[in-house]
Amino acid sequence: MSGHVAIVGATGAVGQEFIRVLEQRNFPYKRITFLASARSAGKKLTFRGTDHTIQELTKDSFAGVDLALFSAGGSISREFGPLAAKAGAVVVDNSSAFRMDPDTPLVVPEVNPEDVKAHKGIIANPNCSTIIMVVPVFALHKVNPVRRMVVSTYQAASGAGYQAMVELEQQSRDVLAGKPVTPKVLPHQIAFNLFNHNSKVGDNGYNEEEMKMVKETRKMFHNDAIQITATCVRVPVMRAHSEAINLTFEKPITENEVRKILSAAPGVKVVDDRVKNYFPMPLDSSDGDDILVGRIRQDISQPDGRGIELFVSGDQLRKGAALNAVQIAELLV
Image 1 (cartoon, rainbow, N blue to C red):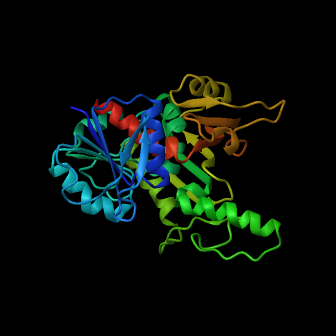
Image 2: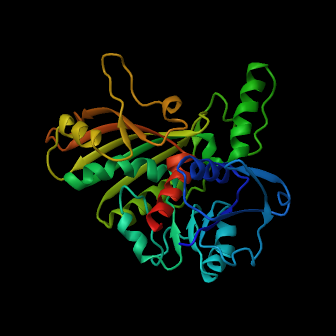
């Protein structure tokens, strides 16, 4: 890769995180271009001490671009992703546009790095809640295959975009000041409340976020037989998702074996102090790269020893989005 990188959606929450992660990880590049909508074009953005002018995203934006990191929504990705690939760029797309396309690799580097080799110009970044789940679970799955996963999520406002984070902050102020709350970005009051994930509920009663976790995990694990069910909930947390995960393994496994595997797993940090009652929290995982894992215990409802409970927390904007995309790009470099 000769080093011309383009960031599509540079002004959004994930786009801003792309820029931070590229800077922090000293990603190799010769030239960088920041692309956004017409209303953001012309604004200045500082990267590695140099001011850059944001350019308007057009069909001609990708001439000479080697790598394009997309985070501007599914419709933009569907329109411009293939154009970027046709122009010779490798696209790492953070939207849901290509995730379930059989010709597009869906990659978490700790899970299936080899899949990047099969790309045809576009590589999909999985859904944030899926990434945060599969990093620790796959480390265990490699040692003792997981047969069933039951997950309940506690998803931060950041997953609905920057304006949802602003809304959480403003609503919290309003509630504490005794003022009325009017939801605009999210469908319900998010301050001091929680509700079903703000994605469409299908005929089977599952929302789109829950079905993403099912389908994406099976695709990355290359295993359609694994049984997965999810309940996804939006909570009044700023930027880190948490998840309660119940696993059923092929063979019996002890909590000490699980702790040992996870202690050595890349991208995972075990936070599991029963004496101090200290376990993963969104406050601790925010702005960090690792998925925090704790509450590691034998599932007492599975007397055959094949059940394990976990509680995890990970930064939605970093490992759940921007960091994972940059790690995919690093595999290409």
